[in-house]
Image (cartoon, rainbow, N blue to C red; front, top):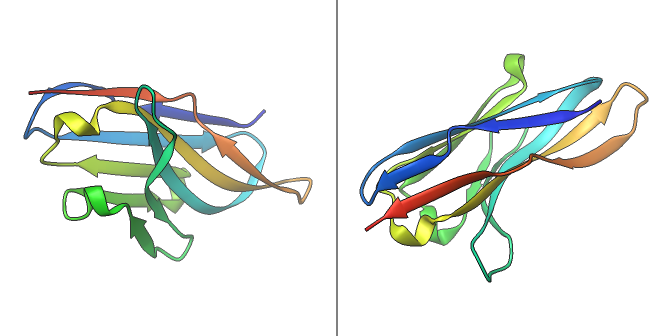
Length: 120
């Protein structure tokens, strides 16, 4: 059974930092793109950052220069280092990954979400 397990969320003051982790496991042959999305109350889910298997990255304009996405292929893990956090970064953060399973099917999978709250 595929699992994307996130960790690292919490409460932080504005200007602080947090590091999110997301580990994928369960019948995985290979991993394609990985990324982080967030959803604030009353808003649509939006892309925060993504990273390809080759390491190319993409960021939302609102987090450029403050957030860094990275991945550890050996650990099937993607990270999101968040610095200079702002109250408007408050949201539930979701990990996403494109996974090639042992039955040779690709699928789009999501983590359960982790709350990030930035106080002013």
